[in-house]
Image (cartoon, rainbow, N blue to C red; front, top):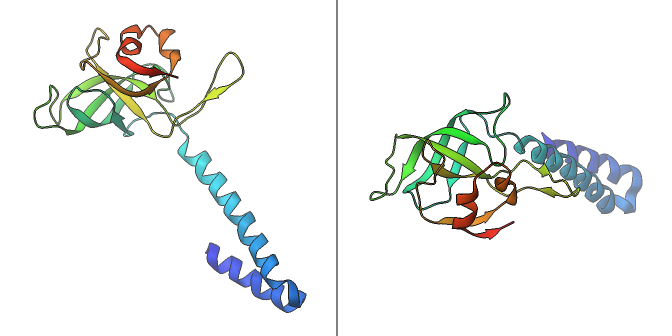
Amino acid sequence: MAAGLVSKWSRVGCSLLAGHCNSFSGLLSASHELGFNNFLSQQQRTFIQMRTVLKVVDNSGAKKVMCIQALKGKKGARLGDTIVASVKEAHPNGKVKKGKVVYGVVVRAAMQRGRCDGSEVKFDDNAVVLVDKQGQPIGTRVFGPVPHELRKKKHIKILTLAKHVA
């Protein structure tokens, strides 16, 4: 559909503008791609909700989990929120096995979140650290950056295990 639209307008532009054919079609396709990419970026940046697949960034043994329920909030989970998840992929010798229902704390979210100083933080992926019912991490290491917003949500142990606090 998009390619058909651009080619139709470029043919019209060639016949009407004779020598300016290449610049007209390039301008049209660039503006269309910008609009489409903007739409996709808005579409992907949503809450962590039911059936969202998240990457596990600790050494508990799980690789990927699927969110079953966000424990706080009607729409879904954001940075620092606790979720209930099902393990979809796991290492063979890990503490957590495939199919187990676990709790997790969202440590990276693709949806942007505003900070008090006016800046915003957002990550490329959705990631979680697995915790037990008391909120203590199952693993002993946390990989990748972790936002300092977890301090407000009382997840101090996860911050101490992380190497890089963003």
